[in-house]
Image 1 (cartoon, rainbow, N blue to C red):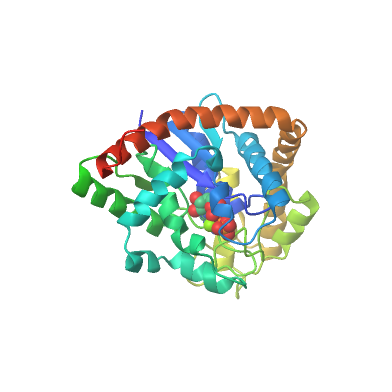
Image 2 (image 1 turned 120 degrees about the horizontal axis):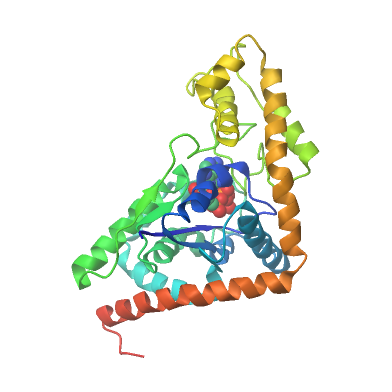
Length: 329
Ligand code: ATP
Ligand code: MG
């Protein structure tokens, strides 16, 4: 079975619809066909200022959400990144393979370091794509199901792997980004030209938010001039975003939805979509609560996942160290 790895940051109290439709939905589906490794990437979450207590809480809530959304710990290896020390160990080697110039070209860094009012932009935020490369290469992943915003980081990962292989002999599998077409980028409801993001909370639909608030957020989504409900990303980014979300959650095609809303108004679309989203989040919230009611059990499950992950990661790291010229441990 082809190998899959992906991760998500515990940087907010809840995942949002973009995380689910852009990434996690594929994670769930791929469990049936691939050998899957999924992690909560807490090492990445400290690249921006954070609160330790909150981070621990969010790490558990993140794992609980993955389980509630359908990740099955018997089929997938579900773990927390900091519990597998091979990640930062391989990351150092990869940092030494990466050029300063190429790391400087990462647009996510440019966005995050300028969009957020950070007291200090950390070196960790700058090198985070390299740690991400290590996350992927440790597991010899063939595919990485992510949102569109991660495409450039995947390219960097491939370049680093290729460079290492050329210099030291074939060690790493070159991974491919697995990005879905329609919901690879879910847009912010208040600014439908920006991606929905955990750390830039504007029009973000959180999975764990009060369902009444969820419906209200969707009802107050920015729509476009005109009144027709048609999918046209260029001229109608707001409506198109709502149609993509609607289609993904309901399983109805965009054309089908366009026909159904022919002659109706934006208000009708938003009201109905609100109901669809509420119907989706309600059982997820109940399931998350169930997992969080027993944190000891959850921690045990994650420790088991980390053990399974380490079995694979330590093999890749040992081979890498040997190739680089370190003495055997
Ligand atoms: P942060 O703002 O902290 O970076 P995020 O919302 O970007 O948070 P991540 O944890 O960085 O979330 O990303 C988890 C996964 O969700 C990644 O695969 C990412 O590509 C995907 N993703 C994030 N935002 C969107 C979006 N708006 N549409 C589609 N996929 C997304
Ligand atoms: Mg992100």
